[in-house]
Amino acid sequence: MSKVAVVYWSGTGNTQAMAEAVAKGAEGAGAEVSLLTSAEFDKGMADGFDAIGFGCPSMGAEQLEESEFAPMFESVEEKLSGKKIALFGSYGWGDGEWMRTWEETALADKAVLVSGCVIANEAPDEEAIASCTALGEALAKA
Image (cartoon, rainbow, N blue to C red):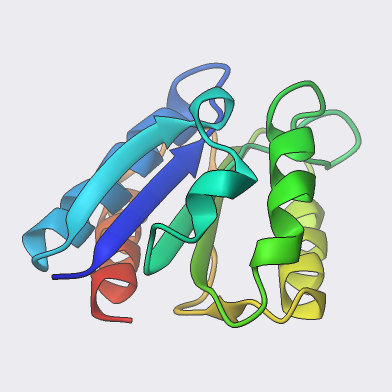
């Protein structure tokens, strides 16, 4: 059984709903899942998981949330080489630039993306939730 962490930050609940769908998908595929906020996760925990899903909405000028999520992610980056990960999040404006930038960062860290990133404009609709569930399944099978 694989161990999967789903780590997220959510201001409005949109990214939290996505995180819960990722966790449900991973559990449904047989993984042992830990659903954690970014404040509950640190780099010392990264080695304890076979795969990690990271979720953060677009903030400000299409960037990761700066007070909790970005510092946590930056601290974990040194642990991402060869780590199987997935990225997801919601946005309310722009065109998803924050996710493309985040994906480039993860690839530069030599992380292994198990699937394409999932983004949702505002609250995730049924299609976005289904994509998040599939993302969780991919994390479990990675």
